[in-house]
Image (cartoon, rainbow, N blue to C red; front, top):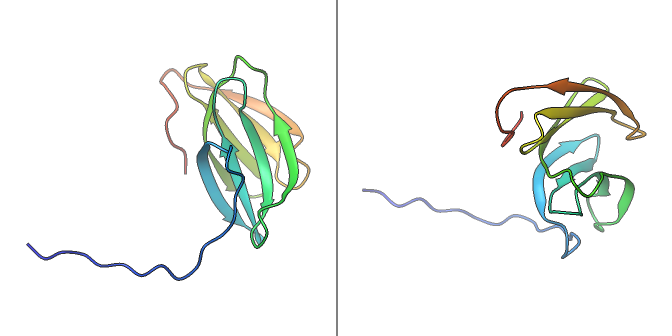
Length: 108
């Protein structure tokens, strides 16, 4: 069996407390979904310095998982709540919800 190799070509700073659940590179920024009980959010993060540009915090009872960008929207899924949230990609204003009957673990 042949072993695989890798090379780190760059590193980027991020908040140490951020429990990253989803990460998408979009228009020079990271769209980051952070999940933890009482600390779930969707945020736009500066790639080079790790500063949060915009953030939408979710209620304490919502645990979010992944996120993806399509067009001018972000789809953000919850782990066990049975719904996801749609946001405007530049303002992070909620623009709707979608439902599903399974647990949310990843979205692309």
